[in-house]
Structures are given as C-alpha cells and as structure tokens.
Image (tube, rainbow, N blue to C red; front, top):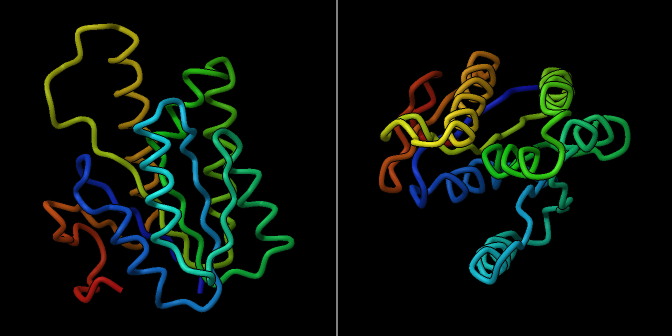
Length: 178
C-alpha cells in the first residue's frame, strides 16, 4: 500500500540507518542517493553508506531530479519501497547548481511523491533548531529546507524524529520502527 515516512533529525542522529531498517522489511527496494562527492570526507561517507545496503537495493544516484526518478520508478521499476536519502543534500545541490529552478524541482518532487505507488521513506535533516544563520544565503537555505520538510511531513503517514539513534514517533502510531 502506498505510504510515506519522513525521517528527520540532526546530523549523525541515525536517520539513514532508521530508513534502511524500515526498508529491510520489503523484498525489492529502490535507493535514491542525492549526495555528490564534492570532497574526500563526503566521498568516504557515500562509500560507507553504499556498503550498508545489500543486493536487494537498486541504487540510483540523482543529485537534482529526484521527482523524475520517482516518476520513472512508478512506470518501470517494481519496488516495494523507495528510500530517498536525503532532501537536505538535494536542496544543497539545487542551490549550488540550479537555484533558478528551485520551485519547479520541488514541485516536481512533491507531485511524484504523492503519486508513488509504494512505501516511500524520505530522509532529511532538521536545520531549524539552531541559531539564526548570519548570511542571507544560508537563512534562505534553512527557510527552504524547513518549507519542504513541513510539506513532506504533512503528506506523510508517519514522521520519525531521530535523537541519538533513537526514533521518536511524531506522527503515526507504529512504535516498532517498521
């Protein structure tokens, strides 16, 4: 049955691990990876995340057009679950490379998310719990991140906030983490 789960929290809080734990309950999985290896630390992080996924995952690396990947998955790939990791990196890619298309890419993603025929697990980072950023560019990024997170949370059947590796169920009532 189509369902959306949003997993949010701070950096290194266990969001990706929780997404994989949920997806492991499904036979066939699509993993949409949004990170690009801009530096050595991120390259190592990406490689570590790749090793965490087993052969039941088909991975698509797409830094910008995740809405298109979701639409294509609906037409061609028969997944029981889709993991998108992560919205925050995706927004960073858009800000860096296609800022003028921000609204169109967000709308395309949200439309595809609403129409996804399987369980979609979306990972994002909660940025709005710290200090107000000094620069206008960073404030805009945090604002847009908060806006997309709120919108996806509204669409979601379940919202999980990760704190130090522990899932806190904010929306939905499944307490087993599956």
